[in-house]
Length: 266
Image (cartoon, rainbow, N blue to C red):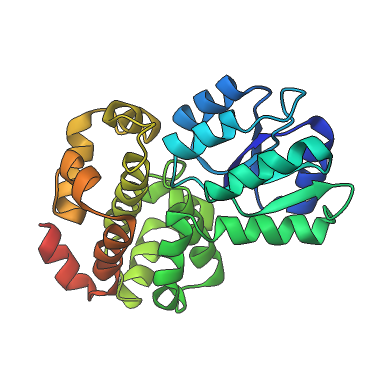
């Protein structure tokens, strides 16, 4: 999972040590760079410091919350008098997790906060919804499929999943059929459009932004996937489908017997 780190060097070093390789971090040294990275990179979580610019400021973080409300954000900052009012204001904007450098940023605490915020992402919730269906799969294949569902922009081809799991395509398909899952092509596409829907809920993204970030190539491919897996156009799903409803529609497809899913998509 890619995490935006709009924090000073020392805190980023502490965060990386605590993550133990479970998360990848992309550094933003300023707020405009943070905006650009969120729009262009598959960022799923943001760690921010109101003191990033050298003085305690809340406006830039509030702007991130307004433009990208579905992006989980937590604050990692230094405890000092000038940050108190900033943190109070950010709390009113729904940012509740705060970790203080040199006080409660023990690796175990940072790991827990990262895990709690990561669990709120759409991709992680999809994995949780279908976890029982993945149980019969061999551990190596299950792990790679979960990774593909969490990072649909990185793994978009059946061949990539098979190669990462170190199995041939025939073995891969045999295990998927045995588990009663939709074909790999369908569940990769469904995970991808669910991620796209999450982005489209945020006013900071245009449809063109999402097409580029998700590597759809053309907007019509996103439209096709939206109709197939959510029953709506990209514009309609942005306006009339909540993240919970989108997740439920996609997870219903995973809960169906494989044959029924294939017929629905054909």
